[in-house]
Length: 452
Image (cartoon, rainbow, N blue to C red; front, side, top):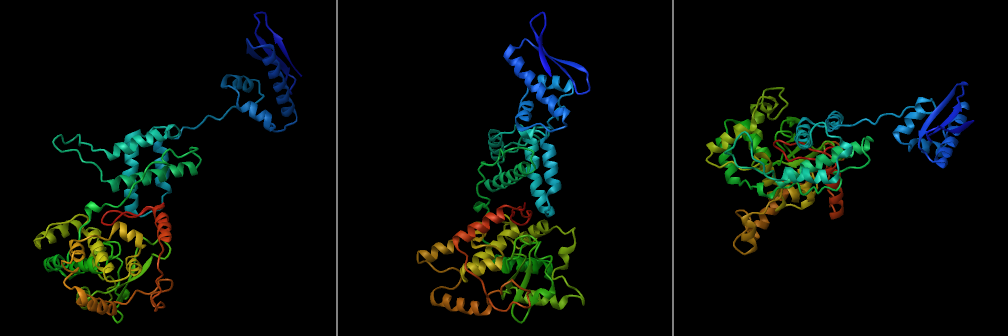
């Protein structure tokens, strides 16, 4: 049993005999009689549970949990409750380190993640308590990365703002980082959840690479391997270097005029690991020349790309300059985008999407381009390309016959014989886009893809 006693100065204490027979007291201070009596009843309940070696009931456990730290410490000193576990502060550096360690992504995607995590670390500081970050802090960070910043090491250089697509990508990664923090139980809510992402497409950097420019550039190439790199990017829509480097001679079907393309970038998306593309007339002689030159037993179509020391971008800049052309933004991506633009003018959108390895919606956002020739055709000034009218229709039919649709990739390349592409509805395209945005994709010479 416990009792309340009153000291000479009016302060109160609760006295009790512990389960081991020892007399103990808890000093309450200048409490009211009613408050002291309520506390005494709780002490008796604690003694009963301790004597019976029983866990606290819900009501008692809630009372103990909500006690002020000072009062709780008094119960700990007399052995009625266990010490509280100190809350562990999770710093931003700890979260970013755990996120990086848990991410199973390609090196290029990891590099893209690092751009965002470095930005978060720089803005908030590595020791920032993630539990104290609010949506206001998230808004401030987004504003900071979207605004132009001058280089402190170069006072004469003008401030350069990040492109909207870059800002969008970093926001997308930041939301994923803190989504993981919620999943791991480190914070109750995601302060970045409602942050506006924006579009990751950047039409200002789109550029149509004309066939005439490609012809001049291939003439300036130092050898047939470089000509194949250019032709595979521009006339087969292959991603460079990731899809060209894994292309093997066994993937070339000379009789049917098709290439089996393996895509490391989209291998994580169901149905997008392998696709089949047509061998265009511009590409075929270049591949034949390479095939005739290949040493016996050689598997790689372009062996040079397997050398990690190869610097594609720098060499390609020199080749373009030698051809008398001006380098364009996103060198290899825009050649793939130009191929997509040509294809969609001659073939149904769902067929082109299958050849490119993504949905029609993604193609429209990141690849398809509006050319001056489109305006000319709309205003009666001419057609797209060298042909127009009936001539264009006849050539289109001829091209369709020369380049049959790629087979369904549900089975192996050898087994699939019958084209079975399915039209994709607008709703399905949005669903596929949402699924792709949950993960992060490779960067560098290729457009980014979401991965986690």
